[in-house]
Image (cartoon, rainbow, N blue to C red; front, side, top):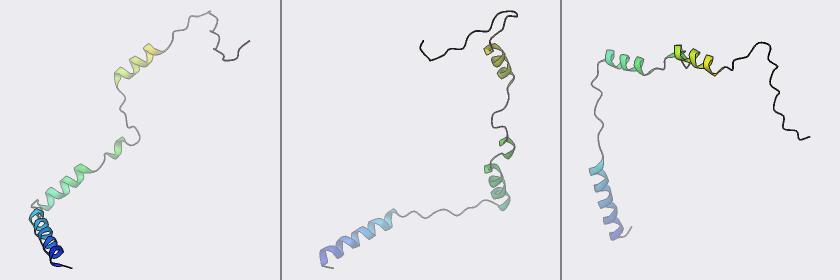
Length: 83
């Protein structure tokens, strides 16, 4: 390696060493670490029902259902075939 490249490399290494950050040690107690792990775990009770049933959901479903009139003929289904 010639002198120019050696000096450049030396400068790059010196600059890189200045930018290195040392991580801080974890000063939490074992009880705090265990509590944090427990809080970060997913709630497995919600796996079978990911969305809670709300009272307003039943009212919306009832309002969206079409009302049928007794004795009225059913509406014909739309067909895409042309006559």
